[in-house]
View (tube, rainbow, N blue to C red):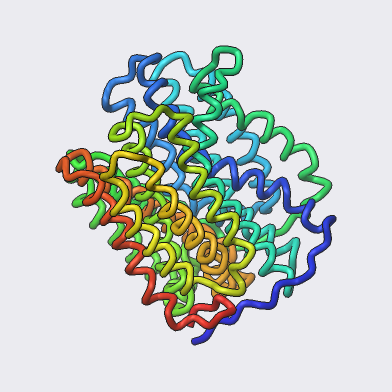
Length: 447
């Protein structure tokens, strides 16, 4: 099966404005996965957080997000995507304020979990609403905006967090990394009802039992990735997820709607695009995690100086993203692998400026690959399954990111193998991405 993306349209300025509330939410929720790495050292000292609480501040967001995504997609289909998006945006804004004002480590952990649930409510609705706002040929351009926003947010965490902490507005320090979401969230809420229409997906009953089994299984999978000492949870995940799969098969056999449509998961084009997106996000998460530690611990840079180095990654992404439809994922995958090779050569050296060429190449590779791959996955799913596809895509991204951070952390910190060995993890993901995109035509399709 060959998937060909539609030609990019000439979208008007007014049309782009309609997408701003949705893209603002995407930027905030993606940024919060990464910016916590910058805020965490200061927050840990101020709140006297122990190892478990520190780990949960970082992992609680991802756990809640991944466990809630599929259910959130179905809620949007059933109760209205704009309505569920609005609820998620309100909750995310309130949870961000709670993070920024947290008096204890336990409060911060609880607020981070609430942020993760809110982000899950938002994510699948964004893609479904963009599809409704921009039908036909305009949809490719809208999904490209989405992919670019995700990429910029993911690579801006270190730089933006460093700037916010260095600015120390009102003496708030690390708290501004969370409080900055409050004005952005309010600004996105204000025009939402006027700009974004209400849409619904297929009116199917929600499988609550299946939803609980899936959420529990995902949590049990992710926990050992954040703390290897919790490996028994991975064993427990097998029967839980097995029960979920068996239950979905029984629902299909009985003619009832499953939580996840098996037809979507069996679609070859969607499966290939999904695997490619997961590898791309694993590469990005592993790379940013390793470099954050290398710059601050090996090179002794502070958050602001480290963030300045990271801007090379953003610059490469921004320069390449507008050219994604011309060059596409194959070129992007090769540039990404080449950039990681250059970083592996430069990382052990004494001067952090040696990292800049590799960061520029890696950023350009991500810019060429990200939007077309996300668009390909969503186009393969079609309109009816857009909510489910978005939820599966987000879950795969989260799982891939957490797994990459866990493995690179084990290599760098647990095995004390050094930055060169740790960079081998994202490099392996980038190399595995190449075969999935080599047969893609220049229009950035996956075939």
